[in-house]
Length: 419
Image 1 (cartoon, helix red, strand yellow):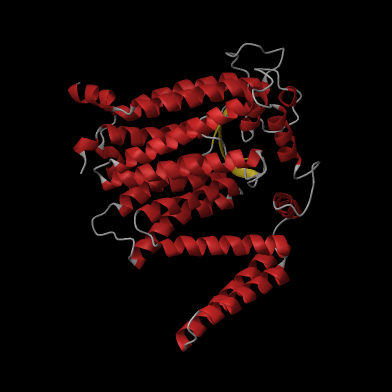
Image 2 (image 1 turned 45 degrees about the vertical axis):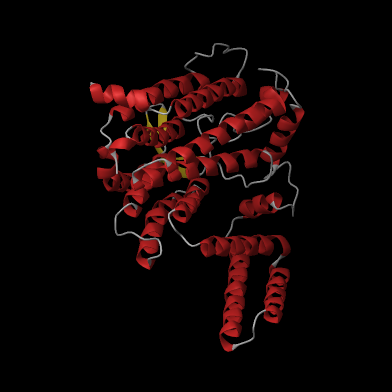
C-alpha cells in the first residue's frame, strides 16, 4: 500500500491533466462532427461519441492499471510484448477484416481492434530495451543494423496491410536514435534524399538529374581536386542519379493511378477538388470559414452537412477550426506543444537509460501524428490516414496512445528506483 500511494503521489500531474483535457476536447468535437437532430444526447451509445465515451472510460481504467504495475515489468517483458505484437500483425494479414482498403482490423462483435496501433508502444519498449543495454553504442554498425531491424520489421508488416500511414510513423524513431548518438550526418543524408525525392516528383527526372549534376559540378569547383574527393563526388552523382531514376520508375510504373493523383495534388502539379483533393479542399474551407473565434459549438455548416469525409477521425481538426476558429485551433496546438515539451523534460530527468529512450519514443510518435494530422487538414502534408492523438474517434488509437503515454508516466513516477 505504501508503494502504491507513493506511485500515485509522484505521477506527473501536468502530463495527466493535459491527457485528460485533450481526451475531453476530442470527445466534445466528435459529438460536434457527427451531431444530428435525431440523436442529441451526448451519451447515446449508438453514436460514435457514445462509443467513444466507452473507450474513454476504459482507457482511464487501463491507465490506472498501468500505474499499479511493477515498474520492472515493462523492461523485463519488452521483447515478449514486441514479439506478441509482431505475431498480431502477422495474424491480422490472415484473419483480419478489410476496412477502407486496409486489412488491418480484428472484428470483435461490434468493435474492431487495430494491431498496428498497439505495435507502436511495443516497438517503443523493444527499442528502449535494446539501446539501453550496457554494451550498446550507436557508433557501432551492429547496433545500427539491429536497431533498424526492430523498427522496420513492424513497418514492413503494416505496409503489407496496405496501411501506409501507420507504417510511416516508424520513421519518427530517427529522433530517438539521434538522441542516443546517431551521427548528424545521417540526418543530413536523410534530408538530401527527401529533397531529391520531392524534386523528382515535382520537376521530373530530367530537371532533377540536371540539378544533381549542377550541384556536383559546383562542389567540384569548391573542393580540393584530388583523387579521393573526385571519386567521392562521382560516387555521389551515381548514387543520386540512381535514386532519381528509381523514384521516377516507381511513380510511373508501380503506383496506382489514384496514388499518383494524390501525390500530384499534394505537390501542386494537379488540382482535383472533386477527386483526390476533395477531402483537403473541404477541410481548408471548413477551417478558413471558422475565422478568429469560430461559428460556435454545433454550428459548423461544413460539419453539419457532411462536406468533409472522415471528419470525426482523420479530419477532426477541421471541426475544431470551423466551430472554434483560430483561437480554438491555436489552443489545441498549444496544448499538444506543451505536452511534447513536458515529455522531453521528463525524459531528460530520468536516471534510467531505458526510461529516457522510451520517453523520447513516446514524444517522437506523438509529434509525428500531431504534425502530419494537422498538416493533412490544412493541405501541407500528405493524406495518409493517421489519427490526431487523444482527439480523433477510435478505440484502438485511444487505447494505444493511453498505454504508450502511461507506461512512461509510470516509469517517471518511480524514476528514483531505477538506475
